Length: 512
Length: 127
Image 1 (cartoon, each protein chain N blue to C red):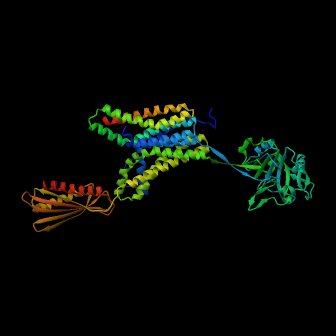
Image 2 (image 1 turned 60 degrees about the horizontal axis):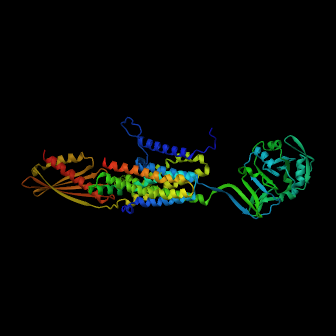
C-alpha cells in the first residue's frame, strides 16, 4: 500500500519524467487542431498581433528537437536541486532571565483542544490562555486554564487550589462561588498581582498577552480581570463552544521530554549556556542549499548554451521575416524570449508533479531552479537574436536592364495593356499606377507597384522604349523605395523580383 | 586531435565536467550519482549540438580531399569519444573517490551515447 508520505524510487521518477516529457512534446508536435467547414464570413478577432508572434515563436520552439534535451535538462537539474535541499529552523539566542526557570518551553496558537489535553500529560505546567471574555457577576473576565504536574514555588498556591477543583480569583472578589458551564465552583481567593509579572520570554507572560508595542507589553493589566480555572475538558469545551482564540504555554522545569512533537508548537525555547535558544516554525535554506541552486543554474546554462544555437537557427528566419513585415525589433526580441520561456514553462506542471512527493521545501527549490534556468535561457536566446539581427537602414537600390522586343513602337499600347494584366495578377506585387509618356521617337512607361508582403515598400519601374533595327529596345530601371527599415539583402531581392516580373511580362506580351 | 581546440563543444565539455565535479564533491549522495549519469548523457547530446557546424565542415573537408567514408567516420567518432571522455571522466573520478563506484559507468555510457550520435550524423550525411 502506498501511504501519504510515499517516496518514489529515483529510477521510477526518472523513467516517469522522460516518458512524460517525450509524450508531451510528441502530442504538442502532432496537435494540428480540427478542420472545420469554412463559412462565408469571418468573425472579427481581437487577438493581439504580439500574442500571435509569441505563438509563432513557441510553435517553432516546440518543433525543435533541442527542446526535448533542454526540458529534460531543466527537469533533471530541478530534481537534482530538490534532492540536495537542506534547510534549518529559524532560531535565535537571547540573553534573558525568565521568572520561572524552565528546561523547555513550547508556545502554540494553532494546537487543537484535543492536542492540548494530550500535551498536558508531558509537561510540568500547561497554561491555556483563552482570549474570550466570560461574564461573571456582570464583569468581563478572561479565563486561564491551568494544569500543574509538578511543584512550582511561584505558583504553589494557585496549583493547590486548581488541584482541589476550585477557581482562583483575586482576593477582592466578593462572591463565594462561580458558576461556569452549569457547574458551581468554590472560589479560592489569592493575591494574583504577582502572577501578572511572570514572564517566560520577552513579551510572553503567564497571563494573557498580545504582544509588545515599543517597550510596553500589552497584557492583562489588573488581577480583577483574571480567573484561573482547572484545565478540564468539559469546562474548556463549554467556554470554547463558539469561536475560541487561545494560546498554549507548556513548560517543563527539569529535563526535556515534551518537545518530541516539536512541530505542534509555533515557538520552542530552551536554555543553553546561560542563554535561551528560541526556535520558530519557519525554515530557511542553508548556504549549502543555495550553493546547490547556483551550481544547478550554472550547469543548466552550460547545458543549454549549445542548444541555444539550434533554437536561434530555428527562430532566426522568423525573426527576420517579422522585421521585414515592419514589426519593431524590440517587439520581435521580447516575443522571441517570451515564446521560448512559455514553451519551457509549459512543462512546469510536470516538474511539479515529479517534485511534490519530495516535500514542499524541496519542491519549491526545484521549481525555483527550473524557472530560473528557463528564464536565463530565454534571455540569452532573445539577446543573441537581437544582437545578430540584420542592421537595417532605409535605402534606395537601383537596377537597370535592357531587352529587345520583336515588335514595333506603334504597337506598344497593346504591350502596355498586356503588361498591366500581368502585373495585376501577381502574388507579390500590387499595381499602384501605370502611366505612359510619349517622347520624341521613343516612349516612356512608368509602373509603380507595392510589395504585398510589406507595409510601405514601393517598386518603381521606368521603361524607355526606343525603335531599333531588331525591334524595340526596352531599357528598364528599377527603384525600390522603402519607408520601413529593410536590410540591403531584402531590398535587393524585392528589386530583382520587380525587374524579373516586368522583363518576363514584356517578353510574353511582345511575343503574342 | 588538433581540431579539438577549435571545437566550442570542447570548452562546454570542460566547463560542464568541472561544475558537475564540484557538485558531486559537495553532495556525494547516491541520488546525485544517478542524476549525474543522466546529466552526463544530456551533456553529450548538448555538446553535439555545439559542434554540429564544425563536424559538418570536417566531413566536407574530408570528402573534398577524397577520403573514404570509413576514414571520415573514424575521425568523427574519435573526436566525439575524446569530448565524451573530457565531459565524463572528472565527475566519475570524484564520485569514485567519494565511495560511489557506480559513477565509473559514466564514461562508458557517455561514450556509447556519443558514438551513437556521431554514427547517426555521419550516416545521415552519406545517406
